[in-house]
Length: 395
Image (cartoon, rainbow, N blue to C red):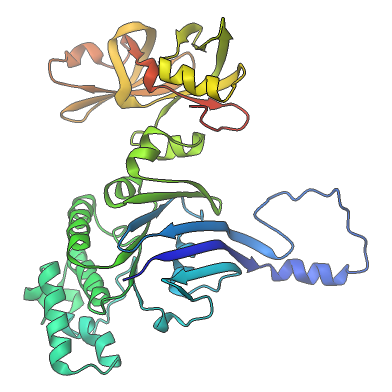
């Protein structure tokens, strides 16, 4: 098995149109004060991934997550060798593999679309790569049946893909990858074509699979639930840049900036804009909706240590950290969603829409219907404060 090192990895897709225009105007002086409209577009082309640095330990499960177009799949394809690296260095173990062909990198990849051969049986699909390597028949049979046993698809080995469900096909695709016993297993949104119930089942299967095989995983998804449940560490990306790297608990409890705070967590964190961080008599407090809230001792120490000055902030609080029917804040219920064990209340508060998650045990649900006014509060030690200008978390 192997560790991976990505050093300053950058991917630029050449902009041929820009080059043509530049060639025509090569004699014209360039205006040094001219600003680019989009920082993602340079004279060389469109920058999809920028200065990506990551150390992945042997057998670690890393999840790349972010919105569509953030560069996560491009990064995965560069690791696979399917995309050329524009600059930077990629190491698998101690070997620099920038110029190594995909087939020689000792990796396997599971695609979103299964990519199974329709005319072959499950057994033949899983054995195909081993046959290309000209392994003995007995060894091929052993590896295929071992992988099928791990994935619980032994009973389907004689079937063709069209006779399988989506979840079964994805298991075959995973089986085809793991029979090779690769150093690194890459997965590009493998569950996105499945319905909600199958996604939950397959997530559990991947967690079990990880315990049974000795390999390093890199998993790409736009679904933050998958990221939180599968990854040892999560790499959150936006516009080609890494926003934060950490364990699921770290990025949930201590988001680095406003984007991470809004992306991780379902429902997303509530934000109160136009708040003020105050410093009076050596003590910090935050003004939210016209009310002053003193910060806890740990928050005081954190802000004092960095010499934080009073400033405009956006206050964030997660829906699960809201308390209903207590406190000095009030809001009008716009939407009430019954989720069984929980009630999701969408409140209109001073022109801001927020969500509170309330356990239904012992709750008078009828008293929390649309149009009702409710009181709410939250623990100050669970607040997040984001600088209005930099959007960085001050705590």
